[in-house]
Length: 327
Ligand SMILES: NC(=O)c1ccc[n+]([C@@H]2O[C@H](COP(=O)([O-])OP(=O)(O)OC[C@H]3O[C@@H](n4cnc5c(N)ncnc54)[C@H](OP(=O)(O)O)[C@@H]3O)[C@@H](O)[C@H]2O)c1
Image (cartoon, rainbow, N blue to C red; front, side):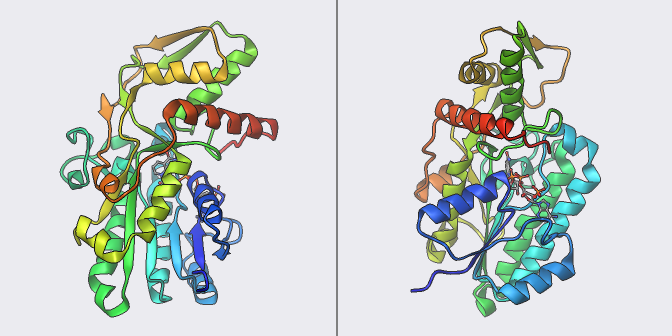
């Protein structure tokens, strides 16, 4: 049987490139790929023309505007506009051009700030969001609801089967190490690496170090994405509901920021002090998602946090050697 033609949107990003790696490792080589320069997914006409010309069979939607607290706070308009446009354009063009299978990548920040821990899929839309990334989270929630709505309206007539996965914090090769706009783990990798190189005696981290966070290696996320895309329809439907059709993808346990800093220090070879600036805010005390549904469906993470941080640091060293990614 010939291979389906797969469009991975955002294939140069951390997650998109890992999905392509995963599919290639499984012997898939029928891809259609476009860089942002070749196809700006906020441009509706260009997206429609692309889908009409290429007519992919499956879509992995891993293109998005992504960043840490600082970026979300500084560019809220871009975070809501770009993400709403990208997903609306891609999901609708997929539908009008006969794509039956699509996987939308959301984020665990869709859940309310004060949701009971660990957060399961039912926590969606039960309370107020974390204000710092509310625009991004609202866009992601709209993406989930688009997939569900297209399934509900076109599932029968067009065999539409659009699924969503909500990853926890991800890290690994292809991460963003920008000094201000990055997420916590890549930011720590950069800071501890620079401290080691400069011989600094102390690295000071914001907050008390007690908040707990969950981290998943990006290749595990890619494996989960392909696993969910390939689940047969009856199984997926049996474990979701028409208006709660997303699945969490997490590591299953969390670490304190202080423990995380210790692991990063070890991986980078930094031997100085680790200090905490307790005048800076901590954020939520705990953010852990419940991935029990996906575990029941046959996926488990394979890469432990210590091993993953080691691999991520190796990848970081290669990118710094080649000029670290700056945005
Ligand atoms: N990273 C995490 O910790 C994390 C956690 C949970 C969920 N996710 C989700 O996973 C998905 C992928 O994230 P990531 O970490 O892989 O982000 P990433 O490394 O920044 O990759 C995103 C990709 O999307 C592309 N892109 C952005 N705007 C575009 C546009 N207008 N048109 C076409 N392409 C565009 C980017 O191109 P350029 O590089 O050229 O800008 C980049 O290749 C996102 O949906 C994100 O919400 C990520």
